[in-house]
Length: 177
Image (cartoon, rainbow, N blue to C red):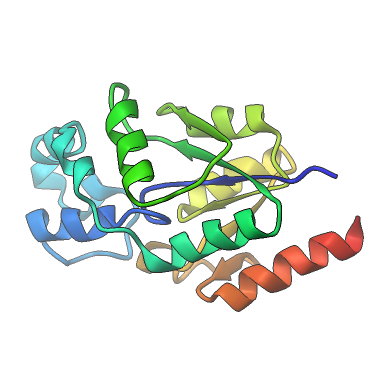
């Protein structure tokens, strides 16, 4: 049985959103694309995203950490895949280690979908609807962590906000195989 699960970092394990909002404001959180929130601050946003120090001290997201702990406890192979800018791999791995995230594989590339497809996972856990849509093309299911930017998506997607939803999903996967 394929037991590989891809888990995203920002928005799932690390609270990038809080850091961003503390720097730019809390408006328009229903928009996933940061530059769409503040079109007049595009350069400042790009500078923020490309500043490695932003990623060093992000707060962990308790729900995401619970997901990884659950997956590890039940024998799933956790693969971390992030779309962070190039050059932040060491900062990211140190953050994961500092917060006790146990994982089998790590990939970092702004072309995140290709990296996820290369892992050939059972499913992916992410917060971005665009990732969900792209992975559907590759027949990879995505559990979408409930966030303000995916709240109003009308499609029949699996938004998760509680560990019981994760348990139910993976319990049904075991039943199918």
